[in-house]
Amino acid sequence: MTKIKDKNILITGGANGIGKILGEKCLKEGASHLVIWDINQENLTKTVDEFKQKGFGNVSPYIVDVSVTKDIETQAAKVLSEVGNIDILFNNAGVVVGKQFYEHTARDIDKTMQINVMGVMHVTRLFLPGMIETGAGHIINIASAAGLTPNPKMSVYAASKWAVLGWSESLRIELERTGPDLHVTTVTPSYINTGMFDGAKAPLITPILDADDVTNQIISAIKSNEILLRAPSSVNLLPILRGILPTRIFDFVGGTLFGIYDTMADFIGRPKGEALPEKDNKASKTEKAKA
Image (cartoon, one colour):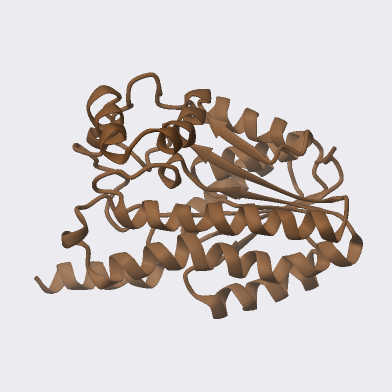
C-alpha cells in the first residue's frame, strides 16, 4: 500500500486541471513536499499562492517545458539537488489538438507526441533511478480512454495515449520484477470537465467526469496500488468490445449506437496557445501584432 504522507511528490502540468487538484489532495494527505512542474508562469504563481493561503508551505514551483528533453534534464537535476528523490511521480501534463489528421501541421504532431509521449518517458527516466535506489516509488501515468478506441479528430492524441499505455504497462512489469515496493498505476479516463476538452460531448453511458471525483479515484488507486484505473467504469467495456467484435461491427456499436465517433465534432478545447510553451505563445502574439 502506497502512503502519500511524508512523501516527495512531483506533478507535471500541476498548475491547472486535475494536476492542480491532485497536488492539493496530496498536500492534505500530508505529503512532505510538493513539486509542481508547469509551462504557464501565471498559473504556476497563482497555484502556489493559493496553496500558501491554505497553509501549505512545502510547495516548490518549476517552469518546465516537457516537450524539450534538455529542459526536463536541467530541471530534474535542480529538483534532485534542492528537494531530493521523488517518491511519487504524476505524469499528468498533456495536450490535445482536436482536428482532422489532414489539418494537422508538423508542429501539431510533433508537440503532441513530444509532450504526451516523449516527455512522459524522459521525466520518468530521470526520477526512476532514485526510486530504484531507495527500493520504493510510485509512478502514475495519466493516459486516456482515447488509447483504447479510435476516434475521429483525435488521431494524433489517440496515438500518443496508445503509446503511453503500452509503455506504462511494460514499465510496470519491469518494476515489479525489480522490487516489491515499486509501482505503476495507469489511468485511462474519459472526458473530464477541466476545460481541456470543452465542446466534446459524452458518449452513451459514459458521462463527462467530474474532476474532483476522478482525482479522488486516482488518490484511492495510489493507496491501494491499483494497476489500472479506468473511469468511468463503462470504459472497461472498450477493450472487451474491441476484442470480440469484428471491426466494422465495433464501428457501428461505437460510432452509431454509443456515439463515440461523434464526441469531438464540436470540440473547442482551451484557448489557443494556453498549453503551448511560453516562447511559442510570445511568437504567436508577435505574429498577430505584425498582422
